Length: 303
Image (tube, rainbow, N blue to C red; front, top):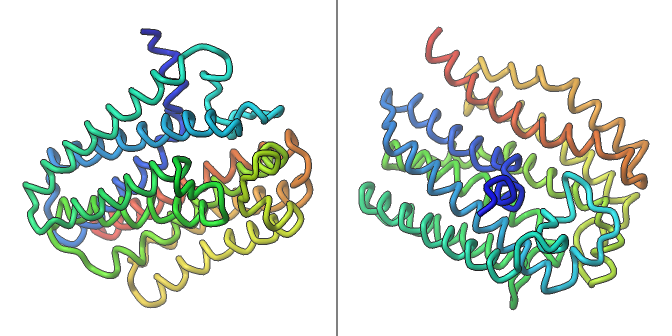
């Protein structure tokens, strides 16, 4: 087995989509309870990453079956799948097999955490997450082939994970945890959204009605800008109503990066390769704002 090839297939650079919300939920729980359960943290992280691997591989497999990735003449580092199937590097059936093994392995860890914590909260959140991830590209739902794909990703890779990680530590849930997860949810949805611009023609060819295809690039980029602004408006709301500690003001240190993403996307939304820096900045914003939210809680606790 070629290890580097499988790292490419599972798309390791996108693991931040899981690492950030697991860390955020765990740190909020530590902030509230003064306790941090390291074993449960690592179990939650590893289990969530296994589910993420299952999602990435199943998406590659089902996009291959639909002809979506094959129809894409302009794959980029951020879109168009891992390309290992298209390049004949790994057979499609092997991708599906490893995907299912990853889902099952992550599910076993989830069941163990559910046993430790009780209440079946982890079980419910896990079932919803696996359902959204698998049927994102799998028939009969193929959620990502309609205009609800971004919403599904935003929910699956933020509120579900943040609340799950919090519950694993605190063994109860608070509504504020859901509210705090929203900026990270918007950002991961925006990562998917901006990555759909280079795939516009391929998606349209195979009948994949993403928001970019449905709205057209010109209107879609306006929605991207509105949602980007909503991230900071939401953080301001959470600060004003004291759902976030005052130290979370450091989130606004990321504004220069957001302005760059705005400017590049505004000027290059219809140019595949000139748009790529905006794709990278959006991914960076998700990680940086997630980490700054974590740092806000840690700094407030210390000082």
